[in-house]
Length: 367
Image (cartoon, rainbow, N blue to C red; front, side, top):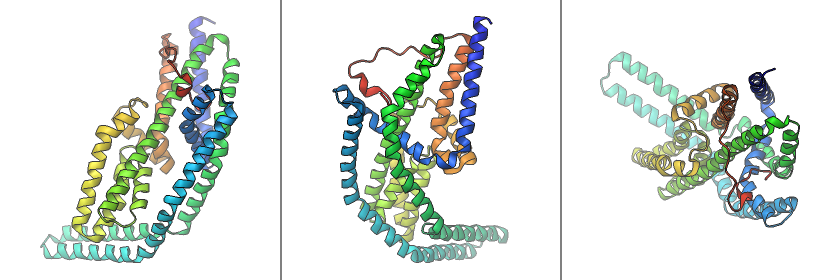
């Protein structure tokens, strides 16, 4: 086989392995939540672990030291934040009948306005149907907040959250070993390309995970502070919701603002308008300052491409698809560039320069 034929065969084999891996992950997606959370946790803690390893601490002890610091911070969060959140959840449960009644009152008021405005009968009937539909959906959404399916989903998430640190420990400890074994199993002429490919994949994942977490925390804190200053009830819950929605590009900020705006409208139309304006300012701040500064060019996707993959991910895999669509597309982009470069005999990825001082800070979960 010619040299070019071997390169084409290698690219095709790699593509087949990636497709097989994607199919396998799709098949077992219901049980992937703790593993995904473990990957996120590992990438968040990797810089601290690698710094301690660089100072001479054995990797297992470095991981345990970081875990101890994380546990101490977690205790502070539990003491300060969880009681407020639980109190707000209880109050929200008690307030659901009131908000349901407010939604019906607003719908009735809009329908009366439509009748008094002298609109054409066809338009008035269409508007009545739309208002009734919105009312029914809003009331149903309020009741779904505390139904048994929501509680089961919350319990499943808490289980995944409890399991993730144990999985992340082994990722931080042994992933480098498995990566080295994998590279050693390859033919020698492929190793340098594969090492560079793994580094590029690691850069994309780490940039997205750390950037998105920091972005969610920033927006969530701003939303909670703004909601509290404007006198909204459930400010902590509204901030948590807004921060979580930041994981969904483009659509997420809008979804994050909806509960706060509805809560403001329940007080008065003017308060609802104020909340909408504040969240618009937060979104503009995110787009102009936070997102470019925090995320940078880590995923390397055009905004139109991001929107397309988010919509496709939501259609194919629901909420998880919305969250994972962008990093998955970024990984596919890197792999596609690698395969095309192999077929055209161009160096697949730029040769990475030797790291500067403190190389341990820039490595992935396993160093």
